Length: 173
Image (cartoon, rainbow, N blue to C red; front, top):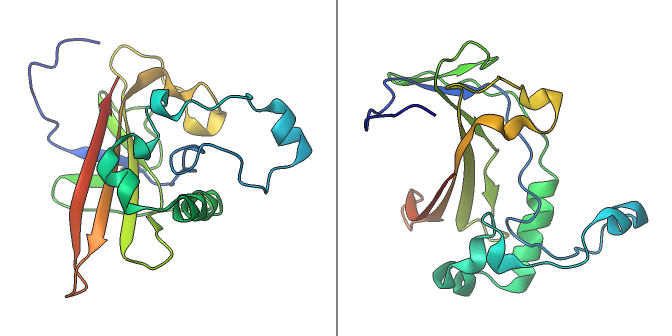
């Protein structure tokens, strides 16, 4: 990757189709809904503290959500299907392909809400096409050849029904 010289992008490009949530972000153990084939092909050990996607390494987040809610969040996230999105603003827009993007683009997920609707989770992956061959996410793994970082944002619903960001987790690669 070439030097970025602390330059922020002038425009943010977001792929126009959401993706699946990472499987272990909310609950990295078995959920009870796995097929025999899934169980046989999964690794036998889970090390949450080593998984950069696992949210509950943070003690604040760990205390906010019970094990039952973490499992419910994983199941809820797993049931969300990718969907088309359309965004357009002053500094951002959706694109159908990142093939011609020279630097950064973003892939997002549909938000996931807790059972009581008081918390919401957003997850983004930022990719950098600089000096990397473009591989479409639709072509399957390894589409992370240009993966630059992952961002998780947790929001809490306020009494006036607005949302307040309570946690921002950035993982730069």
